[in-house]
Amino acid sequence: MGREAGAPAVAEKIVLKSVEYEEKLPIARARKKEWLKGKCCCKCGSTKDLMIEYPDPRLSFAVWVWAKPARRNRHLSRAKVWCEEHYRERIRERKMNGLVVTHGMAQMYRRGCRCAECKKAICKYQMDRVAKLRS
Image 1 (cartoon, rainbow, N blue to C red):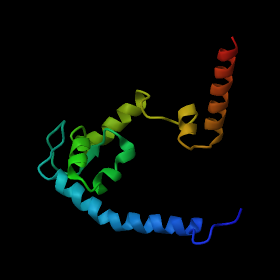
Image 2: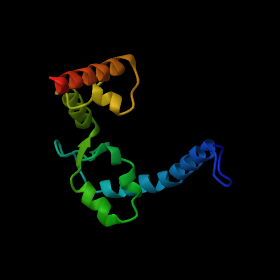
Image 3: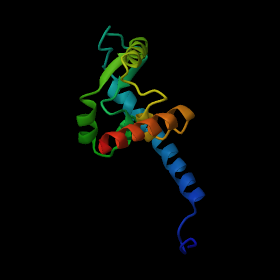
Image 4: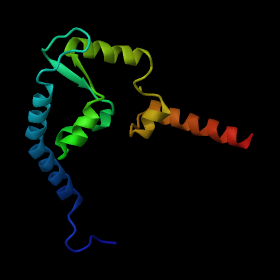
């Protein structure tokens, strides 16, 4: 039941991950800055305050620390570059269209949120699902 000999404690694992992240941060920043050189906003053509809309937002940091440039370039070939103003506008637009998950939805609960609204939503979803299976 106890910890195996030589196995690191949970706190040690967290510290190691944090150190690893901090070590990779300058590499990620440098690669991102280099990739953005010569790029411009896909809407207005501005080259100031550029932001990237990733095809898979979960990989927004990981993509910069991948060792193989071919994989990184393949992923980034689908990314869109926006100036900060148009990026914020795009995010607002997506929220209004319901593309961004908000609290009170089963999907948000699955992503790890445990607020009262999300708990209620997952409960309702599961009850509806069971009722549908029984009928």
